[in-house]
Every structure is written in C-alpha cells, then in structure tokens.
Image 1 (cartoon, rainbow over the protein chains, first blue to last red):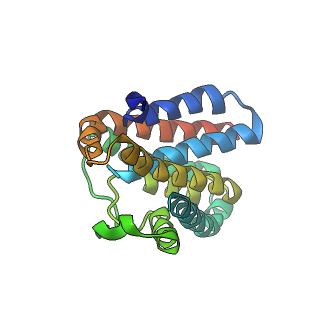
Image 2 (cartoon, rainbow over the protein chains, first blue to last red; image 1 turned 90 degrees about the vertical axis):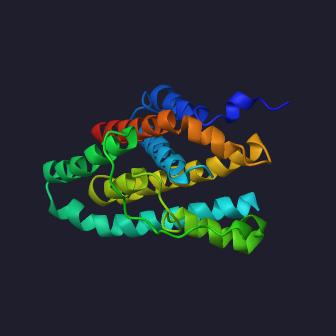
Image 3 (cartoon, one colour; image 1 turned 90 degrees about the horizontal axis):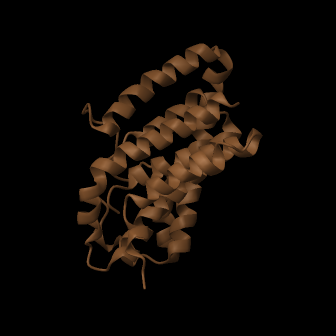
Length: 52
Length: 171
C-alpha cells in the first residue's frame, strides 16, 4: 500500500529541511558544504517544477 | 525512461553550472567578497520576498509550453527532453529560485561547488514528476499541489536561501 503522505507536496520540502538542518549543517568541512549545496539546489529544482 | 530523463536533467544542469561557473570566475576573481555578497543579497531579498508571496514580479523564462506527447518519449528523446529541462530554460519558470542559484554560481559559489548545486537541482527537478506519477494516474496531483503551493513555495525558498547562506558562511 502506498503511504500517501510521503508523496504529498509538503513532505519533500520538509525532508529538505531535515536534510539541511540535521544531516548537512552539522557536518564540518567540504562534505558539509557540498551537502548543503545539494539541498539548496534540490529546493530550487523542486520549486522550478510547478505541478509536474 | 525515468533513468534517461534523470540523466538528461543532470547533464543539462551540470552544463549550465559549468558555463555559469566559468563566467562567474571573472567577477569572483576581480570583485572583493563584500561587493559580491552585497550583489548576491540584492538578488536574494527580492527572490525570497517573491517566493513568500509578498511581492510579485516576472522572472526571465522561456514562455513555451511542454507538448503533451512528451510523456511518450523513449530513451534518447527522454534524455534530450531531460537535458532541456535540466538547463532550466526549456519552459516557464514558476519560481525565482533557479535564478537565485544561478546568481549564486556567478557571484559566491566557486566552480567545483557549483556542480553540487546543479546535481541537487536535477534531483529536485526529477522528484516532482516522480511524486506526481506515484500519487495517481488521473492527474489529481495538480490539484493537491495547487492547495499546498502557498505553504510549499516559502518553505523551499527558506531552505534554499538558508542552505546557501550556511554553506557560504561556513567556508
């Protein structure tokens, strides 16, 4: 069975918040910076998508 | 088909990152950091206000619709379409965030790091059609998105700007 809430439009930005705050930000050095840039880019990509 | 579309997205986004990073090497070499960050703030503030819904203005975009038959593309067609979408210049842009990350690559993000931004952009761009298709076959995702958009767009803008800021400040 599909867990519908996982597919809801709000879930993706929430996941990015978690990825940014919990995963990327605490990582020091280059890896942390790269992870944060991945998150920033993903937010822009999602926003660029509109509804499809 | 998804793999080819995704690979195309990545290629398109990375190409833009490379070109923008190469062009941005000039201002990044010539301008002092304070001037570059000030210029970037001049782009960031209006973009953020736009995404939050406090101001309205048009962003540069390719005002061209995507044809409906694009969903029937296979392999190389999907790769080409993904590439075009990955550049962010294939169709309308409902958001100013792609322009914001482009400005970041031009002004404050060094070229090697720009590839990470581009990879993230491709991933985010790929996520939406995957979510839409997984939601249902009847196109009801569009209505769900429309209801959520007023919340989602500010969230994405804050995530994007916040992540960029922390990444730049931590350098």
